[in-house]
Image (cartoon, rainbow, N blue to C red):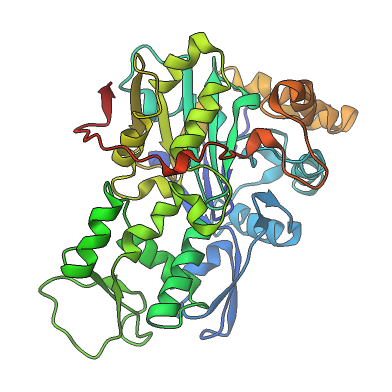
Length: 442
């Protein structure tokens, strides 16, 4: 019997939800949080946030912290709303589920996933994997023929940025690296800068996140633009803060827009100094190399005869990759790190936030998908061992087998395989090459 397949790209910031076969490949992007609004004097759970009318001083209760799902009560409330008639309107007892999980997810948390899926919601079957492992099935490869067997997926999301090599459709976990910079860190840094220089915005997470998405960009020459901010206004941009009466949301002020009595946030060098943290995390005291060095470190952990193929197939997904000029800047710095005889090519998704979701739809529509899922009867007989046998994307056991190659795990410290160190301070290397396109041969 064919059951409808529910697809959930369960990110730390938003949940991308839909049903396979829905008209127009529709996707619902829902905040993955329980949000309290002081102005509305109401609490909004996930999809209910669209009813909010006062975006000032919102309080967020996030199910995920530091990339792991820890608040299951909040997550269940959000999932209940998604499965309800207000969003997807599905009967979970007669449906199948495809859901994404965090990278390096802990085994005990994976077991809770199994319990919620089969014991709480009683799905008929489900499949669990990381977002990057779905990318080979996505739309990024439509213009690539043949599809590359070696690819490097850069997933820069809410909590972290992961560099994930994929070989023949399987993640090479011993070469996966993690950069402790995500959208949450960038928003918090912007809040601190603006609160120190202009208005106190420490409690305005929602507004400052919108400011970040509307105004920030990656500079190709940090020193030049920093100097330009001192002597000209070519970079300065004004953001009109919401007055919460006539205008509920803020916006970037147009050049010919008439000035009234609104409060204006002047965005100067904050526009590019905040996203710069992705390339220079040591500016905040994070003892890691930037994204270019992390990519180079990941590729250097792979077999030497395949490294050139990974340099030539770098794919960007995640919300932070939407910063203007990020692809150009990344290519510019990678060319100084790549071997001379290697081609460096970067592929950017037009919709990086939903790229993994639509890749999941394509994967779920494949005929062999039904053989990869864990069914309710298998879970009833074998428990979470059924998931460990079928879900080869990530398991602690497979990691332990490669521990000798990856590095030792110190007591009280993070694993070296998923954190990029900076022994050579690659984050201080700046390229002076001007690159006209995203694909270039050195």
